[in-house]
Length: 130
Image (cartoon, rainbow, N blue to C red; front, side, top):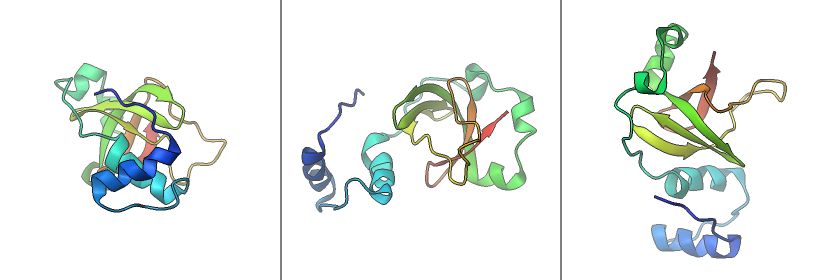
C-alpha cells in the first residue's frame, strides 16, 4: 500500500475522518507517535516466511534478555527515510520511528541491514542488535 505525504493543513481533517475527533498539536511528539501507530503504520503484511529469510542468525538470539524476549520482537531495517524506518520482521513490513528512547547522540543509529528490537505495544525501537 503506497502512502502519500499529507499537508499539515489536511492532516487534522484526515485524523478527524479516521477517528471521529480532531487531535490538536500536530507538531508535538505525542501526536507524532500517535500518527505513527494509527495512520503511518498500517498492519504488517506477510512477505517473508521467517526471520531466517531476512538473515537472522543465532548470534542475535544470544544477545536477548528474558525480558526482551517477552516484550519485544526483532525486525530488520530495510530502508531509512527522513523521520521513519522501513522494517521487516516475521509478521511482515511496516514503518516505525527511527528514534530510540534514551539513546545519546553519540550512539549508533539504525542503518539499512541492522537488526532492531521493537517494543510489542508501542512499536518503538528499544535497541540495535550487533
